[in-house]
Amino acid sequence: MQNFTVRRSTSGDEAGLARLAALDSGTPPRGPALIAEANSRMLAALPIGSGRPLADPFEPTAELVALLELRRAQIEAAERQPVGRIRGFRGRFRSRLSHA
Image (cartoon, rainbow, N blue to C red; front, side, top):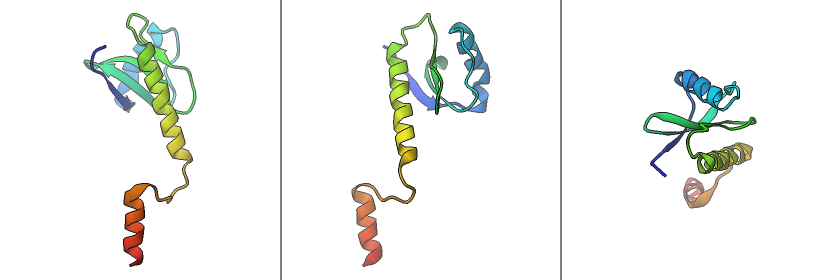
């Protein structure tokens, strides 16, 4: 597989998402999405939150869609974490320094 990038969608992605949705007989995501692209070409997209993936049917995209689904699960898990929760070594170290 070629090199690719996974990123969040921006307002400038509307035309690319519409093209991808038309290729995949779907509808473009209404909200933010994760995008997998290679050589500045959108190959797959997955709405953040809920919704089905969109993928270019003329490219091998099964692994890209699986990666987007994994990344969406990671984002959702991070959003469920309590705000202010200190995680990892660095957080514990800072906490100890602030009490010293």
